[in-house]
Length: 63
Image: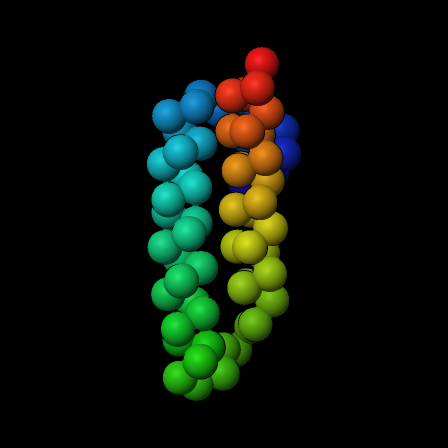
């Protein structure tokens, strides 16, 4: 998700996306441990997406 999409999404959608990204990251990480991924940059992309979504959720909680 792009930052603009994250800002426009509802809190429930963000929580759902966060759970999906965490699950996908976990699966990719496990697959990469067993045998190298074709595109290991996917790990970085999911990790950063998780951070963006978590940051937006935290910002909304503070407000």
